[in-house]
Image (cartoon, rainbow, N blue to C red; front, top):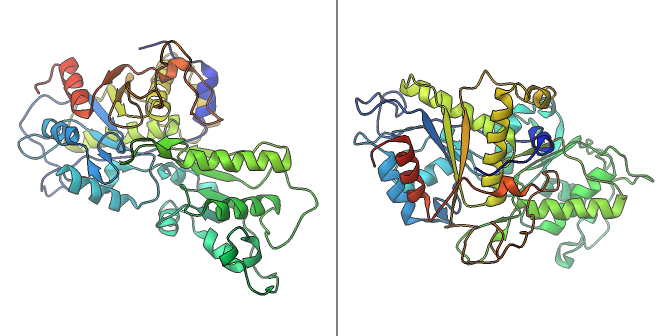
Length: 419
């Protein structure tokens, strides 16, 4: 593995992200778990990205089916612990599990799936605050499942204050409505994923931040520090069915940060950034891998994690950052990084996290426009979030393979397992 970045990169990431899982397949009285007689207990596990690794849009990648034929034993059970770590967030956890089960032909439990915003469960200090939530799909259900009890959607805010949303001429009010003074103040902002109408969400989020949570009023000076903002999924780009990558939530965040900076002259600050490449996400995933192994009765501790992804900035950078964190933890230096952090784990048995980059998604060695190692010696553009420092070494994968099936074969070969 290439030399990894310094403490600065770790410190930038630690205050930010997370995840969880439990492996299951077949029909067992213990929710799909049963002890098979098969092989020796595994000492390694997989952290699998979804988009660009297992699926492209709603189509399964054929190599993923081959990979799961190797990962599942003759009893229909996973041979090793597996957690699905995705930066997607505009879907319910159980819906994503059902979708994966149908596509892969393998039973996937909801608690095997880590969505980008799953670590927000750890931010309990905001769970009773009145929060504006941005995203699409089941945003209210997701926010409530994360523990937030008092949530207002962008659409609800727009209906309460119709004069705020002025870009679309068709949606402008035909008459001037009375200003409301009975709308409770908003106390924070949740950014769960890319919204549908970016101009509306950008405008109303700015209104909330600039008015200190009272968008029907105006303030002579914008408050700073502003209201707390929690965001998940900083991916600039992601891969669907199209030949070129699509805008991700990271692009929306970039727009919001740029507008806030231009309007106020100050930097938009986050109380937390969730999802890959945050270390908290990998801590969360590691804990789920451990729980999964315990439920399967695998006595040997899980010492190695293999993170398979298609995005050098989120998957490779995050896995390498977590590997560096594990090495610092061994030397007792990680304590200084998590002292004011969000989640103190039990002592970890994990010793390493290897990054495996596949060529079926965002990264493609044949496409100069893809995110990945530099072409012709030129330094690649940094597609990461502002709060994660640019460290080229962190974007160099331990292994580059064609697809997830080759990734599984590589790991099994290294671990001395039969294919």
